[in-house]
Structures are given as structure tokens and as C-alpha cells.
Amino acid sequence: MIAAATSNVPAASFEKIDVKDFNPPTGVQYDAVTVYFSLIASVSQAQIADTFRRVYSWLKDGGIFVFATVPIDGENMEIQWMGRDIVATSLSREKVLREVKGCGFEVVKEESSKFLPKAVEAGICKEDEIWEEEHLFVFARK
Image (cartoon, rainbow, N blue to C red; front, side, top):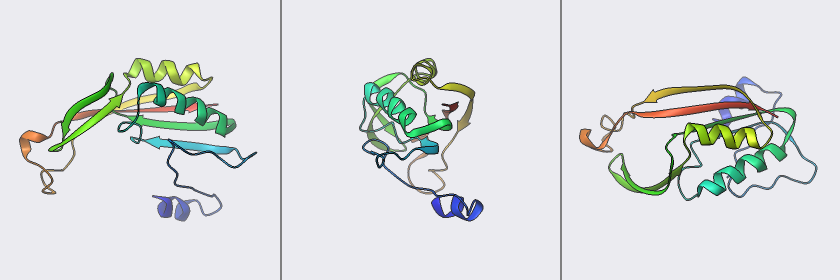
């Protein structure tokens, strides 16, 4: 994705980081930050909300934050996903919006889509181990 972004916007700079433990260099602020489905495993709801606050502090005024998740309200849920046992944490749509706005962001747009992984076709799991899930995308401005 970094290569594709760089090729499409060669004048820009892109970085791949682990948002959970990233600390930007002193004085550096960003035009945009995206967090796509990385705040689901090995986090708590409090850590998700704290990440929103940290991202807010990293952005320039007017900077854009795009967050994507599976909007289910639960913490340390033991579930099966694509045939594998996982522990997941997420926030409901309402909690995501409340936490994002609570940091000072203006929510510019939110949208949902349905997603059905092609895991059966890829040989990752069996048909009865997969389901369509909602994906929530929140676009916010500092």
C-alpha cells in the first residue's frame, strides 16, 4: 500500500507504523493518519479511545483521520474468525463516534459496508466458518 500511495502521490511521504506504540519525532505533525482494522486484536476499548486522542495530537490543524473497524461492542471476545480462534475487542458505531468527537475531531463522513472474505476460495477455511461482517469507516478532521 505504501508503494501504491507513493506511486500515485510522488510528492508526498508515507510511513507504515504500529499505531499502538508509535511516538512521532518531536515537533512533527502529519496531514493525515489512517488506521484500518488494526485496533481489534491485542487492545482494550480504553486503548482504542486513547489511540484516537494520540492521533489527534499528531495531526496538523485541518488534518484528516480515517478509521476503519468492525463495529461490535465488546472487549476480549473469544470468537472464531475464518476458522481460527481469536480474541477481539471493538467499539460499537455509537462509541466510535462518541470517542472520536470527544477528542475534538469533527466527523466529516461515516459509512458502512458489508464484507464477505473470500477465505473459502483461498482455502483458508470452510464455508460454515465465514460470515458477512459490517465494516465502519469514519472520516474526521482536526
